[in-house]
Length: 198
View: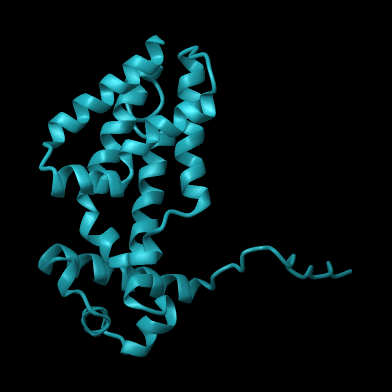
């Protein structure tokens, strides 16, 4: 007797066909190559289509807009970064003492945001971190604070620790106030140590 096929639940995310997923990956790789060669500002939907060897309509069907493409590239980078936090080598990944992991987390997050600052700006509204991405960082910091036996309102302490790592704050410090990245790293580590000691 044949097993009946179940319909997807109304709120489930549709599974991407393998050929569609492959095309999406080809387009994202083409965009990444262009960014590497020419910088974010020179990447257009036409240029991505030409680099990937497809029609421009294919790029628009996959990403809707240039901002959507930039947002997809950011999400891809975010996923890779999260994987390094969950299962990469220490101290960012498991295996290091919690304070070392927390300090490595902050340094890595600052470097990730600054490395992708042009991409984040190009993505515009598409760069807005979704709830799942924010939840991941918040839960990870809360977990490490708990491992360090920090007392107090852990949710708000984690928010205070995460705030200086956001792109809008880093932009203000680096681009407008010309604060060095080394100073930002040192100040963030000082903030973390004060929270842990308190």
